[in-house]
Image (tube, rainbow, N blue to C red):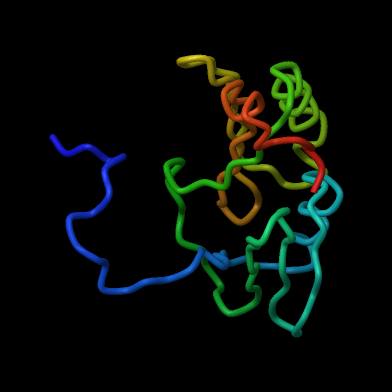
Length: 151
């Protein structure tokens, strides 16, 4: 078994400076934008007709690309975007809001709240089959990593 905290034995072939962004597909960018802005509270900036950026705080962002596909690939829950919250109760509140607004935003699936090894979370699958996990991680909050749950 390898130790994942250990530095590589040699220099990596590619020496990237940071992870810039990721992409996800949408069937209807206008409806997806409404979900990102109104439900998740994530700012969305449309920079070209078929795509826009979700500004996730820090240097990273997601690019939502819409209209190219007629059918989306069903994502598994392991492929998810994690939204950090500051308090354990924020997870429960987020789930209540998901249940309340499930039809408004065409949310496909809402999981139960789980607590494992001190992490409290639940997941939902949006109209485009993207999974979102709402997570409270006390170690990350204590370390100051999540100083503000707003984007």
